[in-house]
Figure 1 (tube, rainbow, N blue to C red):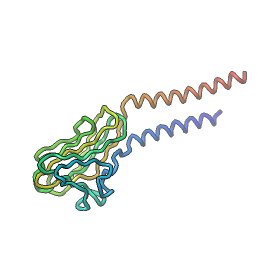
Figure 2: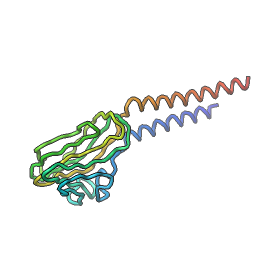
Figure 3: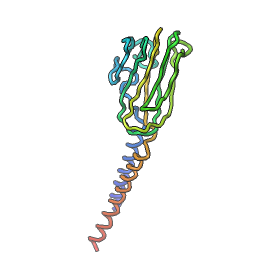
Figure 4: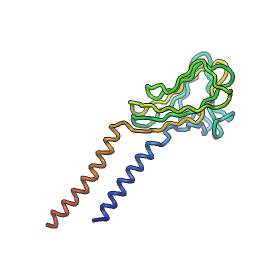
Length: 195
């Protein structure tokens, strides 16, 4: 019987470790733009003045330069994940010109928003990290931007699930209870059979 107990223990630990590692995995594909393109992203820039470049990344080889002129553009990606608390982080840099708009949203929640701004010193990246609660599954990560006279540089976008919504935790708890019940049920069935 000790062997079944250790197998149950191993399964319990494996489920817990898998859940914990999944909860902290980066959910953004190509968040550092290291594919050399907007692969995995949807770009909508009416002025067609945005792209991915090897010029001045925060890390790695590539960064996105966002330069929608006259009207705001968007860069978005659908994340495959449950509702819950997320850690959203990214790095921004601007040139000496004043940018009109940069806004980050996850689902319906605004993560960051600036209008008529400039980061100093110019071309130096500033990191932003915000924890937010998102009520919907598979939230859309969207960056809205406009810079009529220059570019906003974006790099190292990361979104991680910090804590799943309570319903997900309840599902995990239910699975653990069922696993324990199966173990107890087998033991009683064996005792009954031997009696």
